[in-house]
Length: 114
Image 1 (cartoon, rainbow, N blue to C red):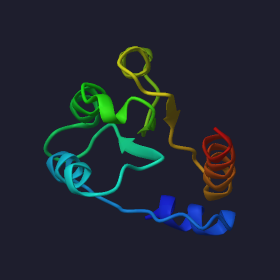
Image 2 (tube, rainbow, N blue to C red; image 1 turned 90 degrees about the vertical axis):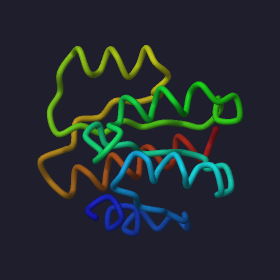
Image 3 (tube, rainbow, N blue to C red; image 1 turned 135 degrees about the vertical axis):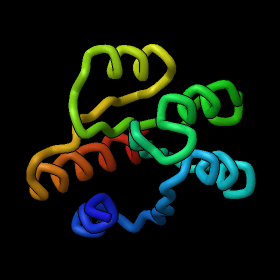
Image 4 (cartoon, rainbow, N blue to C red; image 1 turned 90 degrees about the horizontal axis):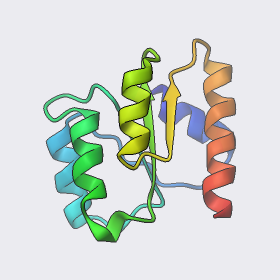
């Protein structure tokens, strides 16, 4: 929910759908309009973030969608796996809310410019 609040603070008019289960993420992508970006928590319930990343990147219609992986801690093995399997970004969740707002604002600017 902090991500939703941080996005709202950026002033960007972006629709955000929040999902806590990997299977639900994949099902939503089947029926929703193609997103500009997908933020995926590494530790989603059910199918984890790595599994979802891999399945999303196997689908050609999502090849140009920016995928941002979020993790509570930074491990080289997780970052390397995600980045080598199609994630555009791997971000350790920041310790402060202000840092999160700054990260989200920077990502929105970069993604919307592409």
